[in-house]
Each structure stands twice: as C-alpha cells, then as structure tokens.
Length: 207
Ligand code: 5GP
Image 1: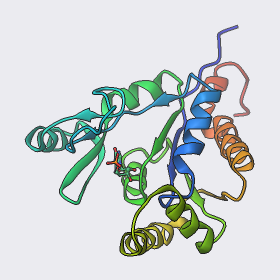
Image 2: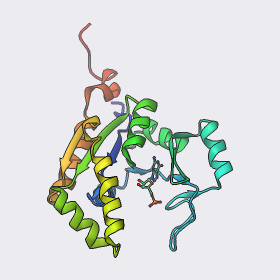
Image 3: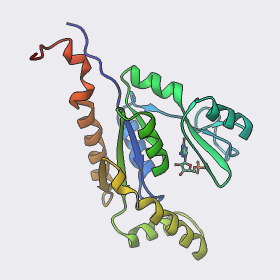
C-alpha cells in the first residue's frame, strides 16, 4: 500500500505581546521536531546572541524591498521603519513535503497569509485571561516605565481587537492547557477532509 502523504498545515498563531504566543509555539515545535520553523527576513540589526539564518535572515532595506517586489516574501510588513517578512520558497516546500509550519506573526501577517495561501492557513489567536493579567505579565517581564507599559497595552488592545478574524481562539489562563489546546487544533486540521487528497487514491469514493 502506498504510504499516505498529505499537505502540511500552516498554523498561524497571533496574540498580543505577553499572551504567551511564542511559548506555545515553542512547546509545539519541541514536541514535534518535524514541524517546520519559518525564519523571517528582517532589516533590523541582530541583537546580541542572534544568528543569521537561525533567528532571522538579516538584510538591508534595498534587498528586503527587492525581495518583496520579486514576490519572494509571502507576506511582509514595515513596522517602525523596519521590514519583516516570511520567505515564500522554504515554506511552500515544507507544506508540499507534508510538514506542518507554525508562524508566529501579527494579525496583519495572518490576514496576508490567508490571502496568499487560503487553503493552507489555519489561524489561531491567543488571548490573555484578562486585561489585568496581561498588564501584570507585561510589567513582570520588563523593567519599563509606566509610559512604556501604557504604550504596550495600547498596542496589545489593537492586536486583540482582531481575534474574530481567526479560525480558533484560546484563552491562555494555564500554559499546559493552552499548549494542549493548540496541539489539538493542529491535529484536527491535519485530519481535515480537504487535506486528505492522499486518501482519495487509496479508498473508493462514491461517484
Ligand atoms: P522583533 O524585532 O522583536 O524580533 O519582532 C518584532 C515583531 O515583528 C514581532 O511582533 C514579530 O511577531 C514580528 N515579526 C517577526 N517576523 C515577522 C514576519 O515574518 N512577518 C511579520 N508580519 N511580522 C513578523
């Protein structure tokens, strides 16, 4: 019997900063090393410890714009004058090879990814349990002043207002539960009938 193969799922996870998105994405990747990690292109400078091709592909703005114009980025955004984008070729190759991909990008990236790959994208939004809890998390992890916290909260509110655009929404009030729920979304979508083209060749379909 031929080995069933399927197209990968492109799981896009968005959340306001502080809701636990990166932690959830990282836990899913650690539990399943076949998951493909998309490495973004950015025009910002590397931070200490960041490596080319591991954390980002670091490019100058003319190169980034040339890539965007040539269609080499599936989605891209310029935030505070810095460009960020998702390279097209590696992601498409991963999905075609049956590997699931997790992208942690913002709501605008999710919207553009849906336009670019409507059949592949599954959108998952992570909400914090409450505004108070979100503020406590933002305060807890940084030594920022009140003005900085207020500006982060405003950005978080803007991001959160887009949760209805996503297929799935989870509330991260317990990290283990949130990771288990995110994994369930991924597993359920692996089994979605529309992705099981592989089975049509193996099992008869009523005409
Ligand atoms: P940082 O500069 O702190 O690494 O990232 C800043 C922001 O850029 C984060 O919110 C991150 O989600 C976003 N970002 C990173 N890579 C991409 C990408 O490929 N596309 C988009 N749209 N946003 C990205």
